[in-house]
Image 1 (cartoon, helix red, strand yellow):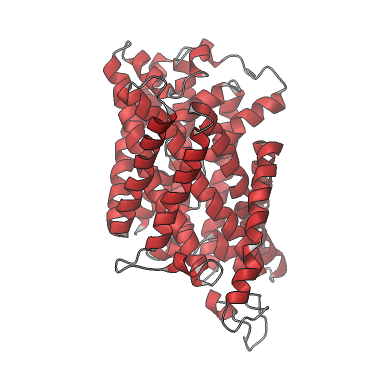
Image 2: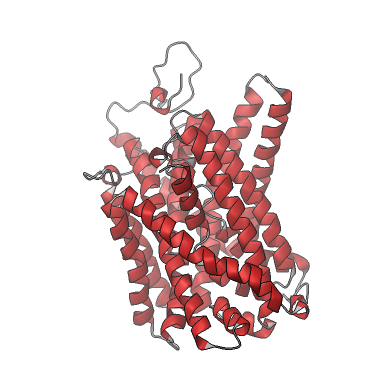
Length: 455
């Protein structure tokens, strides 16, 4: 993938169906939610810069966040980050599907569909992108670019034209949570943070990007910058278009917004519902590749079961792709057995935010460690890079705080359970060396870290 396709992958991964559900959840916090979205946008751009710096510095960054941390801290830290990110990626796919199902219901005019119907719709969303990815990365990139264009046009329409129909009175109250301002910020932060997951898409798939040292960082900044501008414009416009009592109780707020712009014409709502459906498939198309690449890179370093590294004749990690669709399928079956609608989406959003915060945190920590332990060459550049690393570190910690204690607890249990696999994988390695993957500063490297491009 060149810069255009890599940027399209970032945009397509960031702008999924979350943006089509986000205004309803942001509105529950009040207009303070728009300010939270702006802050999260700035933090996400800083993360994009950070991942670009890490990819340019580390010669072999196959696997992105996992590779950065393994390079700096060794195998165990790399495994911890890789496991956490892999969990967040496929759980995030389930969250995208939960939102996608709501718009399919709006498109097909389904009222109170049964759990089996919702599960059937969800399976389509998960397995169609899996098939596209199995065909090959070039076809995946073409499909990704096409869906990005299709979903951006109507989003730009509502982000520009929609403002001519906005009612300023609908931006009040500032705090609609009925509790403290801190509670209101927490309500908005979870979905805002989730909507920007994907900033690392080009870093995770660096092996598939042409000239990654140059293009990964650029693609991340371009993709996140464009997405952030669109998010703020569109979310604020929808909040100003739809009455508050209607907005907070709908799972498809863009349908209501388009119908108000076009004087309640039903076709307008159907059109935006169709766009949201296309957008969701495009996002899942990119995320299926990301989940597969995250597990493939670990498997090839003997830090994940070998099956995840199996490659077909098209260069695809076919087993990883199948598992990337199968696991969220099981998660959706479980969640729809007990919940539905926005409840499922909100639960999966918060679980994903907690598990992705750890890889972000450790990536920033790896860069900070490098900056503080090297000889300063250019003080201005060092100061700039330290600012980016420290701000990214603080932003990553806030991700965890914003999710709430219930999801931190559940996420921690999932992550700790995965750590049991580490000693099993290490024991199964041929010629196991406890020091493999650790940093080596001598003139002779005998610790195995040459696989990461280290000296």
